[in-house]
Image 1 (tube, rainbow, N blue to C red):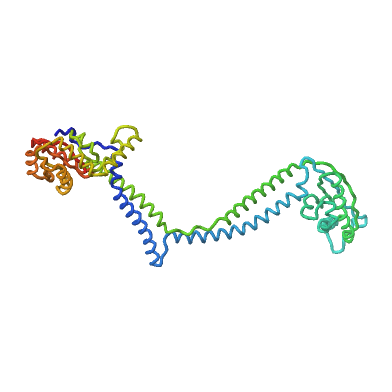
Image 2 (image 1 turned 90 degrees about the vertical axis):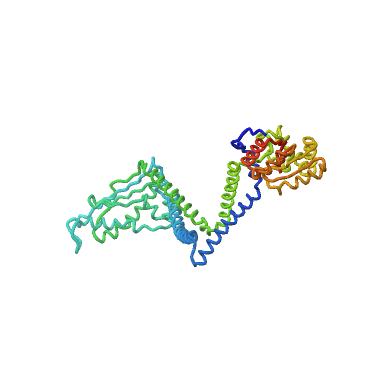
Length: 453
């Protein structure tokens, strides 16, 4: 009995796969234990925390986050109201401002300058109880010209709006105490409107003369009056600035609306399912690694063909068929078909027994046969009984346990005509079968082949 390789079987990844698959029940048990164990650990960890009247770290953080969210929503709600008001005001200003409606490259400016001239009788006389330049007192009266303007239909007809703030941007009454002048300035979109607006504002200045005459008698002499065009490029920049403010307010409003619509932080879960999944993955990977390592370092036989290749003896019967998909040559589909047909035949152990009996009878037509190997006797008795029932008196079949552990078995092996070795796939170790092979060689025996169970 020649043994070609003594160092052990080569690692075959496909064989390893089927070896691992062979242990699917063990893998299932390990996975169930890992899944249920970690899930239960997570559940009872939370229960213990609650039983102590405490909260988990996630629950404490949730309370903090929820309070922060409520405060954020309240702040955003207030900001929304504020930005809506700002946005409405700036849009209204952009749409209705008289100043921003002007063409920056062609602004019609109407100007009228009045010179305050004291009456001759007042030049050298001070008003009773007053001191200083009499014209200064008059200037103070004319400074209130805008205070007398009334927002009414007349203003709306002349300026196109009754909003006093918009009128003040294009209409000015300025008093100069150094030169004793009162100047009315109007900025209009065209010459005609500028003149109308100038006349409208002049009546309020002239309306103050009676009040001013009560202080000092005087005349208002028009020293300059006309309409001319100017360039006001700053108006374009002002319009751009207002548009930029509107965009900024709109963006801020959108951000705060989005913040208000954002839901409250989610209530923390128990994470039992998550932990169970983690346990499933860890235990599944660990079981694959475990049986993979077992395949590599276990030194067991996983395929009947390994026995033939190693010991140069045929395998007469396989009660457990090869699980490797490359057991038969050919294409993949052929592999599947051949394996399937062979498996169907192998399911019927009676057929296997008949085939084995016929092969043994052919090899050992008469005489004595010893059935042995590395297995205990109990595992081989069923096989021996099947052979005896088919061979009858033609063959004397004897069964003995592990040959390597029993010197008497070796003695019997040398005394019989042939030895049939029985090994169990995924159980029989390479080193044990190697030992049996050495003993059979030393004992001058006649091993005829293997049977795998």
